View (cartoon, rainbow, N blue to C red):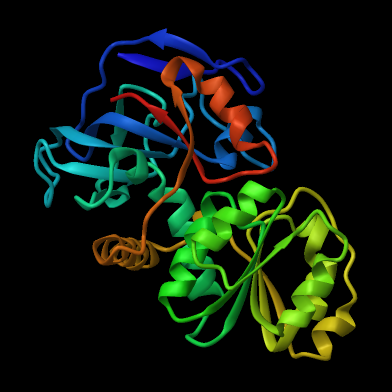
Length: 316
C-alpha cells in the first residue's frame, strides 16, 4: 500500500510503499477514500505543543472509506460498510488504515467520503465545545471567533440548528461570505481593529468559541453577558487578561481538548453528528483537495490564514 511517512519530528513527509495492513482480533481495516487534514496533524509531525509520535509516523486522525477487514472479536460492523473514523491506529494518510471499533462510526449516505473525513476532529470538537463544555442553550448568542475553518463552520451549523444566535468572524471577504452563506447572523472581519466595536453593538454574547486565544482572549471578555463562558479551542502562546472582566460578569474561561473526551461523550457526540447529517444540517464544506503524494502541501494549507473550509486528501 502507499502511505505517507515521517521518520522523525520535523522530517519531510515522504510517499512510501509498505506491505498492506491486516486487522487483528480487535481492529477494523478501512480502505481509505479520503483523509481529513487538521492543524493537530501538523503539530504531531513537528513534535510541537506537547505532541509526540511513534516513528515511522503516518499522519492523520480522520479518514472515511469502506471496511475491508474485521477482527474476529469486532461486532456491529460489516465488510463493505461506509464508515468514518475519528482516530486511527496506523495513520489516515494511507491507502489503508487500522482503527479501534470505538473510533469508527457509520457514514450517513447523505455525506460523501470527503465530507466524512471532516467529521472526526472538526465536528466532534465543535459539538463538545458547544454542548458539553459551554452547555450552550437555545436562544443564547454564540460568538465563533475565527469561524471559517473546519471547526468554526461546524460550530455555526450546530449552533444554528440548536436555536442559537450566531456571531462569527473571518479574515477575508471570501471567508465572510461563507459565514453568511452558512447562516451566521452577524459577521465581522477580525483583522480590522474596529471589529470588536461592531460585535459590541450587535449585542452581548453568552458563549465564545475562541480559536486563537493568545491574540483575542483579553478582548473577548468585555463582550460577555452575565454568566458568559469562553471555550478556548486554539492558542499559540500566552495572553494577558483583566480578571475583573470575569468578576463583573460571573463569567468563566475553560479549556477544551477533544483528547479529553470520555468514551461516553464520544458516543453521544457522534450519535448527534449522525443525526445532524440525516437531518441535513451537518454538511462539511471542502475548501482544498490534495492527492496523497501532495500531503506536505495539504499540511501547509491547513495552517494558512484565510481558511474557507476543510482540507482533505483524496485516495478514492
